[in-house]
Image 1 (cartoon, rainbow, N blue to C red):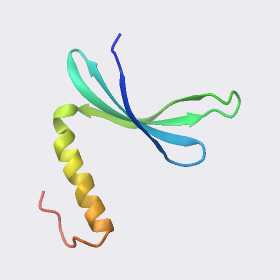
Image 2: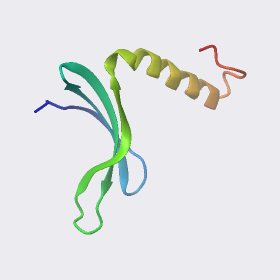
Image 3: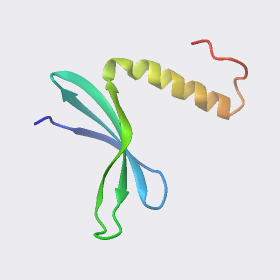
Length: 83
């Protein structure tokens, strides 16, 4: 069994949230972004199939891409990406 370290929970809408965590598989460190939902029948919250898991080595590239997306959203950047 792999230990999971919860990093953050971000509200997506009234019934879903994005959970960010760190885990490992076969000794390789991973980062996981997963959608969790509230099940109407039970009121409990659980994971869905929606999400992405990737090597933590990719975090700098993902962070840079998210920062660029935010800069574009704010109108600070225009044109094609340099990546």
